[in-house]
Each structure stands twice: as structure tokens, then as C-alpha cells.
Amino acid sequence: MEKRCVMDGAEMQMDKPGEECGVFGAYDFDGGDVAPSIYYGLLALQHRGQESCGIAVSDTTGPKGKVLCTKDMGLINEVFTPEILEKLRGDIGVGHVRYSTAGSSTRENAQPLVLNYVKGTLGLAHNGNLINAPELHRELAYTGAIFQTTIDSEVIAYHIARQRLNTKSVEEAVAQAMEKIKGAYSLIIMSPRKLIGARDPFGFRPLCIGKRDNTYFLASETCALDTIGAEHVRDVAPGEIVTISPEKGIESDTSMCIPIKHQARCVFEYIYFARPDTYIDGMSVYHSRIMAGKFLAMDSPVEADLVVGVPESGNCAALGYCLQSGIPYGQAFVKNGYVGRTFIKPGQKSRESSVQVKLNVLREAVDGKRIIMIDDSIVRGTTSDRIVHMLREAGAKEVHMRVSSPPFLWPCYFGTDVPARDQLIACNRSVEEICQIIGADSLGYLRIERLGEIVGDRPICKGCFTGKYPLEPPAEDIRGEFES
Image (cartoon, rainbow, N blue to C red; front, side):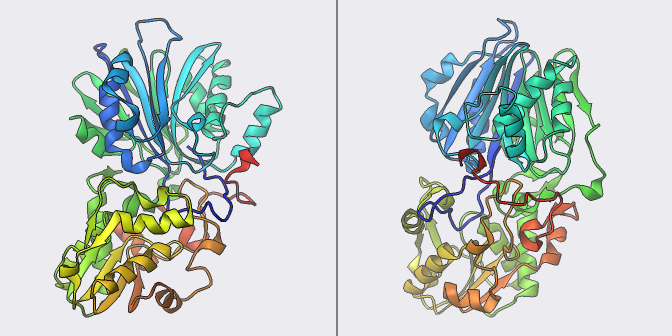
């Protein structure tokens, strides 16, 4: 999809890395309505974006250019009432949940994007971030393009539509557009008679294929397929374009694929973004997090009475720490399930109050005990500081923090909203200094050498930890470029 706009001092991100979005597509070869399945698929992907959402559908037997689309700010169950879903009649469709990383959090920037052009219509949902979006945007603008949004997903849609004028099929147009766009992207494209999925050659963001009876699905995560009772057929390979149609089933174009050793999956899909019941490229996210916790226990042991996780993504790693160390695993926090992920809140004051609204400490569980608290990351340190303080206030004798990722030292340009270096607590600070700042008794991070082991040695991007990126990053921070 995009990259986050640069904000002023009051508009800072949460003390968590923000991911992009979730995408979901469906095509019922028997002609049934797909909007209900897309709705439930997006509900399963709600953790990937809580700012806006949308569904676009079309009837493949009806008028070629007719697309019905509803999108708005808010959660899936807030935007889509039974009455709205009832009106979204069509046997092919695409849906999206958004977390803004480029372009403001506004209704205009909600997806899917629907483009009407001389060859018909395109519906597009995008998860990722283009590093050459500004130059492509300028190139299109100087040739007459008028943009309705401030997101780089529209740049992709324009390039596909323009290439389609000179190609025999929409999938050829997607392949030619992929030769121009650079960065991270998982795309689902709805044309009048085809559903197309495409994944960038590095495989930064996940995309998988599912099937239920005679309906085919494309989704960001396998958990969305489970929710609707679909079988996970396989993942879309990095660089692959899949075309789904009644005439030919699933067609594959691997012309954009690169050697496996050059691929670079985002390791944070395994550490934090994806739901633990998801499999990405054959690897269980739950297993990855368990292993991260075990490695923390091996590499950063400490004597304690209880191991706890910061809900939700810290829980699996905490269980792994428990299994390896033998220290009992327990629950220290009660989470308010009706509060969104804390990084969604934009302002500093909102961020601090969100921690207390979202989490409360079980005093009886921690009072008088030495606690090992496991979380998935520390970005700025503001949230960690408050949670450590909350545990101490509840009577914890000691609080030892363990983090199931290495320290963030560099920004991300490929779809994870890791901010500029001067906002990263680990930049130019030792682990001991960070420990003092957050008020813990000890602090340990996952060793960077362990990253490959937790993902089964699949090629991953470590740019935010090492500063070495799989693609040459832009010379300046591109976030918010279109709004300057």
C-alpha cells in the first residue's frame, strides 16, 4: 500500500512498528455473491489495519464496467452493516483494511481503489510500500494524470491501466507495471473477468491462495482462509503473478521471480504483524514466536518467579521462554479487547493513555514476584516504560524485560512503519542505557543471528536492525512525499 506521512511533533507513531494493511479477494465461479466472504476474511485481518476498510465487487455476467464499492473510516463491523452488504452483489470482489503509512488517514485514501478507464475497470488493494513512488507520481502527473488520493497505491493502479492499453491482457499489464515499481507490494486486482494476485520479487509482504468449493480466494494471511472455511492451496511466490479465471483456473507467471537467495521477507510478519495461527511461506508464525522465546531464555537467562507476555504478540514468545527455562508461565495483564492496537493512536498523550486503557495489571499474579516480561519490540520506549512502571506499582519485586527482536537501529522503507533514527531509543544507546530509561532491572534482546533460525532459514530483510537493505533505499525519507 503506502508509507506513513511525516508528522509534526504531536503526531508521532506508537511505540510499536506499524504494519501496512490486509488484502482479501474472492471469485465465485458459480456466480454466488462474494461480499459476505470478503467481510469475514477482512474481520480476520482486522489486526493489520484499523483506520479504514472497503469492499468492491462486480458481477462478471453483468455490465463490464459496473463496480459496486463501499469504503469508509473505521472497523469492518462499523462500516459494513447487513443492509450495506446486501447491496454489494457480485461474484468477484476485493477488500482491504488499512493502516496509513503514506497519505493521511482520510476516507479518500481508503481502499480498494476503483479505476475506470478505456478498457473497463480495475479494483485494486495493496499492502506494501513503493520506494520509487515519488518519481513515478511526478512522471504520471507531467503526462496528465490527476490523482484522487495521496497514496502510492494509486500510482500502481495508473501504471497497470496505462500498460493495459498496449497489452493483450490485464495480467501482462501487471507484469509490465512490476518492471517499473520498486519496493514492497502484495496486490490483488479485480478486472471485469479475472482475479489477479501479485507479490513483489523480494516477498516482503505475504499473499496466499485459498479455495472453497468453486470459489477461489487471495488473502494476506492463511488465518483469513480458515475463518471462511477455505482450504489453503499455496502461497503466491515472491515475484509471482497468479491469474484466476473460470476458463483456466489458476495460471502462474514467474517471469518476475528472482533467485531465492535474494528474497527478503519482512521478519516482523513472523515476530509481530501476522496472527499466530497464520502460516507464511510454509512457516508457522506461532512456531517462530515460540522459538524466539526459547532463544531469549538460552541467550539472556535470569532467575525469576514468573514469565509473562505483553498481549497479544508477546504471549507466544513468553510461552517459549517458559518451555526453555522451566520458569512458570502466567498472565499478568488483562487486555481490553475493544481497544485497537496502541500504535494506531497518533498523539503522544493518546499513546500514553492508550496503554492504561488497553492493559491492566493483575496485582494478585505479580505482587511480590520477580517478573520476566516478554514483548516483541521496543521502538521509542514510551510504552515499555509505562508497562514496567505498572508492574512495579502492582507490587512486582523485579521486572526483567526480554524482547523477541533485535534493537531497531534504522528506519524501514518497505512497509513497516519504523520511524527515523532520531526517534529510535536504541540508536546511539547501549542496552544498559535503554534498561535504565525504561526502568527495568535487566533487559535482553533477541540476538540478530537468531532471526534466520526463527523463520526456518527463509531469506529475510534485516534492514531495520543492520542498515543493510535488499534494495537501495531512497536518499531521503519518502514518507509523506505526496503531501508536501
